[in-house]
Length: 295
Ligand code: SF4
Image 1 (cartoon, rainbow, N blue to C red):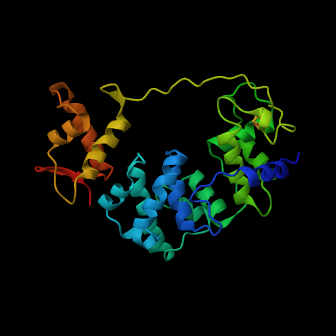
Image 2: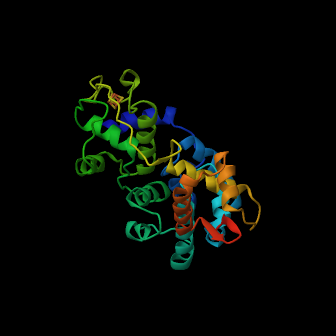
Image 3: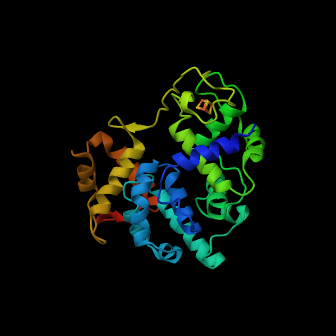
């Protein structure tokens, strides 16, 4: 079935405009944006990317950045450890590849923080290579057009999707193709309420108007004072991010600023463990004077 022509025609009129989708894509920009997109919404990344690139315009600038520099510029993105891994990847590229992002899956996978998705995305979006890129939107669209799915939650296994995707990717337009599938998944073939009535693939799609809406049960996360652990980690970093230079903040003050109320005796153990994890992740340093962002 010729999904390619229908989808690319739709994409020409409906593509989403993002700062990382430029005509002459810089592989460094793809590395940064794909790292940001790993766990952050596109709208936030669209705001943060130009700001980040204004401070670190080249891979050499990023490679030179201290932990504190890069964490400060990661503001609003969450999961701050990603910023350090991205900087470490930039350092590896400068040291091992002369500052040039490698165009080879194995070399990309060897970089800190670069997993199967990010390496495939760099090959595709930076170098227009015909590789399969599977993110959550793409998996969903491929599953639904490959076979009739019963519910909105059903997905095929990657082992099934990869050979199917390999046949679909156009020979010369892998980058545009993947952007098109991602946009279709984000705007029409959505997780909970696919808009089959306006879908460019409706005529060929076996799941067209067949999907029973279902919602995945929420994953339970460790919480503290009723909020997930990761939110608290982000809050502590946010407080330290706003403090200029290398000054230390006492750990009791850090807690009060982040939580809006003092630490209770029964909460000490949790707080100490959280600070230890932030330290071992390279995000903060602590001395008898208190804590600050790591160098
Ligand atoms: S017809 Fe419906 S299920 Fe099929 S790709 Fe389009 S939106 Fe998704």
